[in-house]
Length: 447
Image (tube, rainbow, N blue to C red; front, side):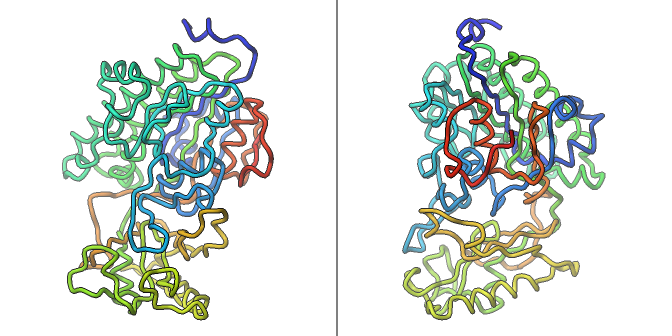
């Protein structure tokens, strides 16, 4: 296998992790005849559905998966977080992840890591031998380290992400073509560095699966127009996983995992509009443009996906809820959320998680007070500018789910039952025989 084999040979066990963002376990396990390479890993090793995190959003999931820690430790709760003591918001990037990444632990132990296309890793770290940042990177020119990586990827027409705007079109043909081109180039890059690079941990993520799910998942689940194209795309993913597996030397353990599950989307639920209609939220202007326009008597506001904050006196700049009333107000909001029904008469929310149940750590000061986990079919939105309707439809027909997350480990002695994302990092380190303390993680090794 070329330079890779010539450089190795010290006997230390290695791990190749391939992420398949948003791929539900049921899709793969219920269609083994369509996806024989995933089925082969399950037969030779271990595979099972695992749980995601609260909230099951990619920007929060990947920091938790790659550190083994909950958002209270990583400091990242979603695509958008709020500054402490203000209504100002920001988009968390790689430097905002406060917990130690699995590849940093590998490097600190004197081993080498190659990291490709992991969401929320921009800008690329320069203390890892190779890194190509993933989702949220502004472009390949700034996302690849060192420079020769960028130069090689440009020859592949490498794309960090598919163009999601193409999925908004009624005709999905151009979007599907772009999705294939994106994953083709990423596979070529992964295969190249797996075979030619000197690594102990290879960590690469295909995020295109999440994009395809957002725009085609209902076609798959409900026999829509693009069901065949959806299956063809996933057969390509399965083929690429099989090829990557075949290219790995015998001392490498392959792990394939998603960060959350997926299901069909029927309604977008615009919760800030709901909060307005129910008297929880008000703005000091008739045309609010951002959260800082919130009024002095607002009691709560929302961020995606289903994160709710009490407008608490002393914590928020214009907090209206006294600390003495916090528990009662939060309980009331929780009850209102649990009672909410959609246009079809179905309950919108499966359960509501209180912050103390989900978040622990040095960075829980920006944690949401409540997180609503939706029932299938309801995608929880927010927006600072009030929407005209609480329940709406948009171009997406698929949504994230907390359950039905995938985990495949090419080892028969793995125990995956009741596992979650927090277990993956300690499992990788255990497989690599990298030392750590049990208290370092919210999860535990599955080996």
